[in-house]
Amino acid sequence: MRRNGNIWEYIATYVDDLAIIMKDPKSFTDLLIDKYKYKLKGVGPITYHLGSDYKRDPDGTFYISAKSYIDKMIESYERTFGAKPKENSTPLVGNDHPEMDDLELLGPTKIALFQLHIGSLQWCVTIGQFDIATAVMTMSRYRAAPRRGHLERI
Image (cartoon, rainbow, N blue to C red; front, side, top):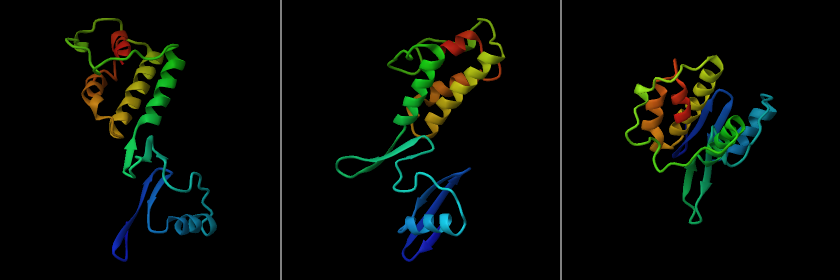
């Protein structure tokens, strides 16, 4: 971050992803491309970054959404399981006790699948889908040794 007159400018980095908040971001990206030979893609007003959509309401209010990331998760789920995930009114079923699950432990391939989906759900929480946080934390407890019932729950 740096001060530019009476405002602050920011460059948020995550591995090789940049989000630039400046008065004149184009001059900065041009400098990175021309002088430092960076190969940048998606240069321009931010619309999608690290799983989040950046949009404006009809009245101009800026907002962040996880919709595109969730849509990609659903597509991945459909490829993996051959059907859409079932819809529920709440993330956890009432009176469910995953700690009591005594179905068989998953093998290495299914453990990796469980961990992949838990990781995706954790990222959803990180980017703003807070309503599933308790359910995701509950199921994350079983990452090391999930059972078939745990995979079915997620």
